Amino acid sequence: MGTKTIGVSLSDPTGCFAQPAGVITRASFRGDLARLVSLVRGNGVALVVVGLPMNMDGSLGESAARAKRLAEALEDRAGVPVVLWDERLSTVSAERALLEADVSRRRRRQVVDSVAAAIILQSYLDSRKPSDGVEPGCDSHHGTRGAVGEERGRLGQEARQGARGDEGGHEEAGLPQLGDE
Image (cartoon, rainbow, N blue to C red; front, side, top):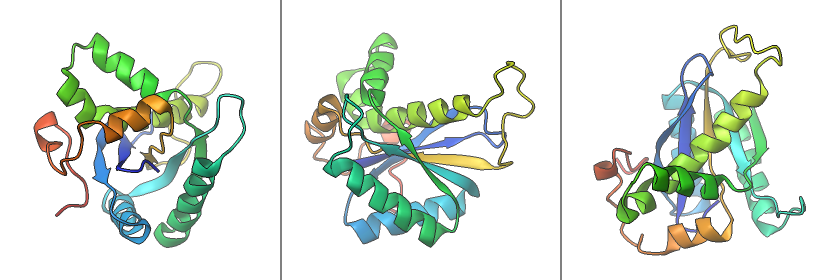
């Protein structure tokens, strides 16, 4: 997971479309896990997709080991299946999309992790669609899916560690600061 935040995304009930759902400011492994379990249960999530930070050559490093640890703990505690999904370049794609949408630098920093999580989840959802292009409800699991972004790319690290020392600000960007109730 990111050192400062975890981006979160949810799909629509049919499992067709991912959308950003907010950012969790990291506290501790146990605290983060409790917040994620609460989010999974509170949204009726049937399957969780956790971003797997792979190196560009496909190898796995220390970040991937942390993502796997989180995925295993989340599956155990939340009681739903968890899938690890390649997240390479998701933050780069999120940054590009936000730049193309002419989103301010300040707002990009606030939402980039959640948008990256939506990109990861949408990639997973798209992989589950039939190859004939027919979308019979899109969802083979018949429930909402969630994604937890585990971005580790250099750009993603800078976005999280840059001017984002504040714990708030996500609400004004249209995304909730999850788990800070």
